[in-house]
Length: 339
Image (cartoon, rainbow, N blue to C red; front, side, top):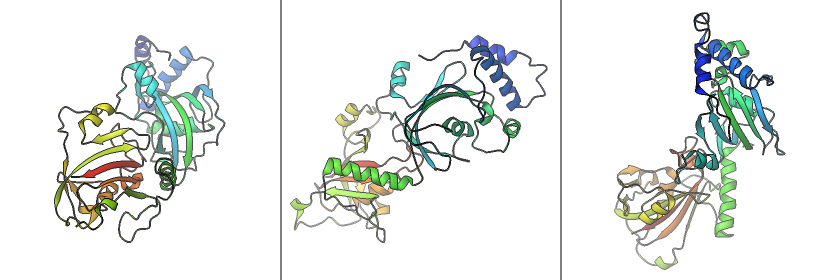
């Protein structure tokens, strides 16, 4: 269980010496408060060469983290100095706190690291870590910035953050090619769940079948039957899933309830699907679709046809993900049926 720091002590730090510190910058004030906090609760911990205070360190045995790699797979929990958890990606901890939501995604996720992408303080925590390791460290407020400076004083002078944070980070792997990493993940998933012989398709004309997009269906029952014309509206049932099997969207009420994403305000029934010659113009209830989903629909030609659409995040929600249900850089799968 984490050590909770009394709020009264934090308040005392904020009040102490206010008059004589009034000329200090925001960064300098936050630094002084943090140093008093460390002196009180962690008197034997000193800052490392990157300016963070490592409280616990469980070494990993995998590859050493490198700032030269663009993408890092990690699981992170962030606390204030009083011990209050402001965010966590750990399911067990969320359950203990009573904040767990069944439909949300918990666990490691890829993020882009480096200047203008991640906090300097997070990169400092990752320095020297190996995959599989876990580190808990206090990150000074001035390092909670995506900018990079040459000296610590420049960080202090340019800081607008008024409080340090405690990070607990478990490191996974790294990659410089997130698309290829996702293609490899899709290929392994398809081999494991659909067997050999499933080939990728180009998601659009003049595109290569490079493993970014798959459409799986059995069209043998529709041999000789007339295809429905383009620019028509039909009905579709669908379920969207992460590759770990977690459902993030569906038109089926039972599936939504079982997955913990049921919404009383939503009507669970087949949606209106407008077919178009150009896959990018396919619409669901008059709304545009992510490229991978619409490209898959463009492969379907008969009422009653079922299919499975799989694609990498570049054809989905890319580096942003979607809410708490789809993390960044997530390949997706849709199970669909036209009616």
